[in-house]
Length: 98
Ligand SMILES: [Mg+2]
Image (cartoon, rainbow, N blue to C red; front, top):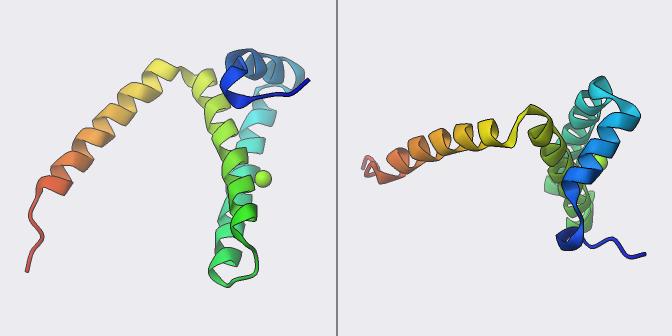
């Protein structure tokens, strides 16, 4: 069966993942995926890997962001994002010094 992101109940995947491997493993996995993306970007800058490698690492990190967001509370993460976007908008509205 094909697993299409848009048609997948990610919440069910997050729940099953947490049940199978536990909380600690999710934190470790997030750290590992972030580290792989960091390393990938360093290699990309030096032309050691192509865009496909970065896209794969972005997919891993995106899934882990979803997993941890679900674990910590999507509403709380969204509220934090809104506060950060508000700050960013204010910074973008400041004219650049010349
Ligand atoms: Mg990875």
